[in-house]
Image (cartoon, rainbow, N blue to C red):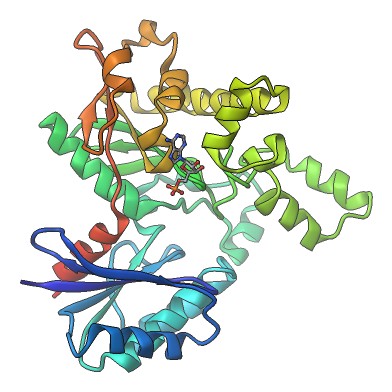
Length: 362
Ligand code: AMP
């Protein structure tokens, strides 16, 4: 049995899982909250594991910039590069790095692998990742689109390819969780995705606005709103929360059903944005073989899936209401047999993907 220890180290939390790589079984795991000292937290985990040593440790790292195109064995030099990339992800990379350092100290001799959220999207072409701003300013500041949720897209696209019996399939994958994005995947390669230089661009999310006119920032800035307040507004008080007063999709749906106009509008805006991207990605891919839904909302909300593809028969997309409404935890087809484009639900498993990618480097 090859076991991988998977670490998702946040600024104040440490989520870990011990995974049997061959079977995919999760052997143990926990979420340690209110972490102030990652080294002490990791020592606690080591104690909990009771002398059991994993074959490899896989770390979720949010930003790999343009440098990391795949999972990478951690060396001192790789640590330094992740540290440098903190400029692009100031909230995430330092916390990820603290987890790496703590694990290297707690498990001497066990190889550590960094698995980057951005790596899967390094296949984007320049026309997809370039922002149309002063090229010198962009170059000097690392400003380009990177995309996120890459580990999830990698897992889900492979599983969707298996379900379709076609690893070369053209897919539009909606990762709809509290954070949300969509990717166009052609034969296992990402060709476009909705998140950009940061995870703020694109879809309407739980608390993030997604796309908006950057002129809004100048408008608010000139009226005295500080940079910090703008950051808080767009990252933490927008999206479903900003529109409907809650970031939990179940609560928004329940409020809309009992007549709340704000919640109804929030859902309409959420769906409108999803359909906008679906149309755009159908055009970019020259048609798709499947539309795939994953993460908390994508896996569990049949109403969201139905709203995204409603009225798209002209594009060969026909959902089967009965299949779509049938509860299941398995990867499955929810389109009608007459649908030219398959509609799939594929539960994501980022921890297993990190475990597999880390073990593959052994
Ligand atoms: P994630 O970030 O992937 O854990 O997804 C979290 C989101 O999934 C939250 O907004 C939840 O409200 C949403 N979610 C979970 N279960 C359901 C459900 N049955 N119907 C609608 N949304 C759900």
